[in-house]
Length: 303
Image (cartoon, rainbow, N blue to C red; front, side):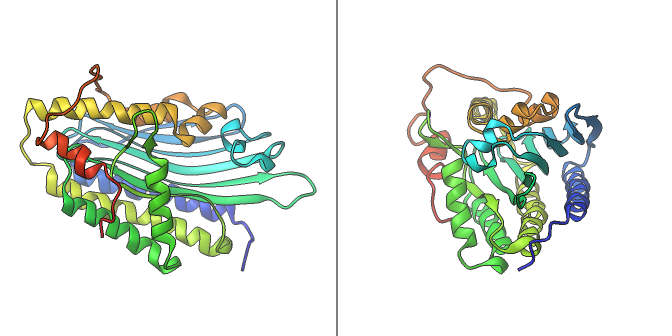
């Protein structure tokens, strides 16, 4: 098992992944392109943010690359790994969120990342993390099956139990405790992953990163031209509120970025351009809106 860390190869892959995902999402939109904003971090490192707005399909979307380093790990990283306290760190990754106009096209999120924590006189502690999840407003069983089957296909070469483990982790992680409901229909989530050694763990991260557009773009193509009403748009904006609540209250990536002195505009690019909250709103029984809660926001085996 080879544990030699190849930082150059990871960074090269992630930059290429950002390029590939942006190209495929631009093709899926057919109108808008990503504007790039490169930035430097005063404490060390930097990144390049790419944001799409007012496309034919996507109301707003962002695909970020960052590579940052510092003298000490932020609290969000050491809270569940106290042995990392006092170590310097290096972190890099690609993170994205796409918010479509059409309520029948789900919002999607994905990220893949690498962390390394170092301390003089000790072996570095390193790991990969990431995954992707789908947040529909008006769900479709075929979409859910395709999303999860693509995720499973990306996992299977690395172990028969990988998909089941990381699907459950995703269901547990993307859960709004204060609402007692999942954020969406799940997918994959993994962190602290180094169990296969460097080369195979890196290969697993690449498999997940490369499969995201295979999972998402066919769903976009199938749903983007469906007609929708003002009622459906209003429900979409209401449900986007849950997305905002999760990202600002629970998301580790958001907390890590803010606590590590990252670029705020890039960290918060995941927030939708329009969103609404209504006091104590509940869907009427036997409506498409109620079906989201009764069927799609119930963790289940989609395959």
